[in-house]
Amino acid sequence: MYGGDFDGNAAFSGGGFMPSQATQSTDPFPSALSKHRDTQTLIPLTVRQINKALLSNDDKVNILIDGVDVNNVKLVGMVMNKAERVTDVSFVLDDGTGRIDCNRWVHEAVDTKEMEAILERMYVRVHGQLKGFQGKKQLVVFGIKPVTDFDEITHHFVECIYVHSYNTKLMKQQPGSSNQTHMPSAAVTTQTYQTGPSNQFTGQHVADGLQGVEKMVLDYLHLPGSLARESGVHQEELVKQLGIPLNKIT
Amino acid sequence: MDTSNPAVLVNGDLLGSYVGRRVRTVIQVVQPSAGGLTGRSTDEKQVVVKGQMPSPVTTFVEVIGVADSAQAITAEIVTNFGDTTFDANNFNQLCQHANGAFRHLFI
Image (tube, rainbow over all chains, first blue to last red; front, side, top):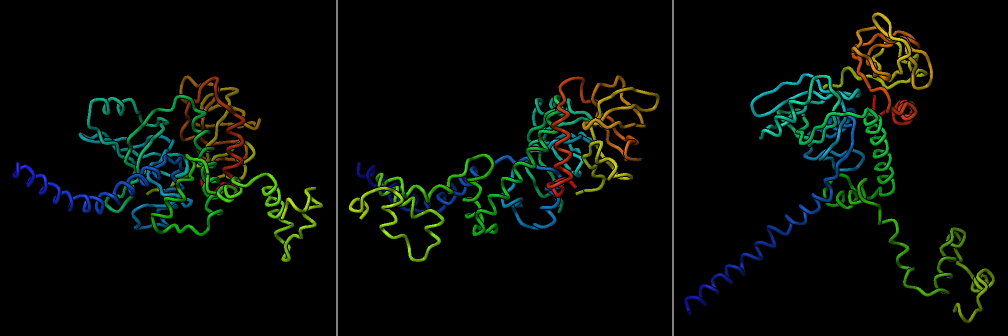
């Protein structure tokens, strides 16, 4: 029993060390992972966008496009130079804006079958991750599907335009968030294409708790005309504009 | 990383601005002919395509090739885009965007 307690204590003291170690080592992990998961949105891109980003980003681990960490990308283009090997299939994807080397690792029969259906000069939709390999960036493909409805090509490019506009607009709204470090960019990317923006409304949350009259006064004070005036808004003006007796305002 | 051979997305109107350059566009086939076809672009302009065609050819085809003039393309690759469900208006507007405000994403 004592041995058991001792073991328990040992386990505990080991546990005493371990949790703190765990909190040291795993805490950054879950938060980094969860941020990582949050930031791993699927972004539709053209090959031109990728190439331009690579030219300007060079050796960085993660490339940034329009202020967004780019991990998972979606491309639509034509398969060229398909080469089947034992463990992988490589091809070049040409989407009209450029060409990018792609590689699809083939582990199971399902994968082989999927790749066999992909023929040369066929239009496909590709999901993958950008990875550096021997100095060149290539796309590690984890999903590939032939395009059957060719409106998809138009749609993909339109989506690229939309996402680009959306992200550049977000970038303009938050000039302070640095694109260099990962943490602030995580905050920015929670507002990327996939999730709706929420930060813009925090200013209004303060007013939510106020009562009717106070809210009206606050709203009036927040009007651009009122804000512009250095002297502030006189009580009597508030009375006149809002039609509320003075004793209620003060 | 190869950026050679980009093909500019064009419609009938824009074809004239890229004579001599590699372009891609979608054409509605009006009349197939020997060694090519005559078609209508997504903005209702007539375009003549020279080159090898897939057979049979569907109503809509995508042509990637070099623009010879404002109405003619020498095709390198022709792809069947189907008989019905292709949104020509959508494609037309995409061409305008891809050559306008959002050129930098494409060229």
